Image 1 (tube, rainbow, N blue to C red):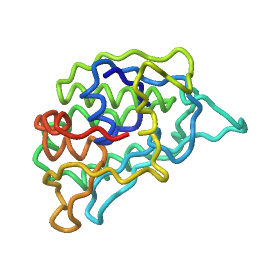
Image 2: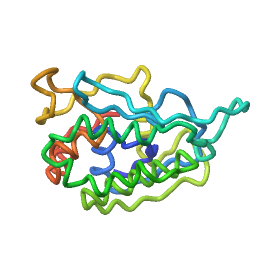
Image 3: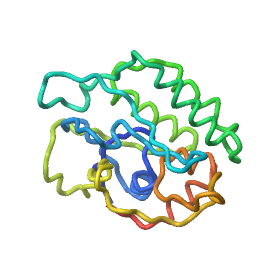
Length: 206
């Protein structure tokens, strides 16, 4: 299966399952930025349940702006806040300390462009899981990407269908039950290297 998919902020389980089960991967680089998508947000499992991590964006007067041109609003300590949220949520998970040194620099290095930061996050996760995902990038936007399988709808967080995946042990699962399709970080910290086997076994959902 040859797929086209959006780069997002620490992609969720549905996103990574598609990446792992694809024969080839093409990343969409030429789309317009849209609000309320996984381009600048991810969900983790915190002590009180599902928690949103949102990257602040610099707003412009343009009606439309290319995703690759969107700049991060670095006038707040959002990176520090996200890292503290991850520490609080996953410090007691089986694999947090194992991957901590690889991930922490992402939250201490300023990035100007959202897409550049998301690609670096994706690259780091692949390194953590020792995944060799070779990908191409688009040169122009096509509404119909045939012959590629279109998984770009996975970027949508508003009104997305409920995607249920096989349960695994989560840090606060005994308090709130299993929460499906969180950021790959939840799976990484809870399952470590076993995350690959898990992702390969999930049914793909667009």
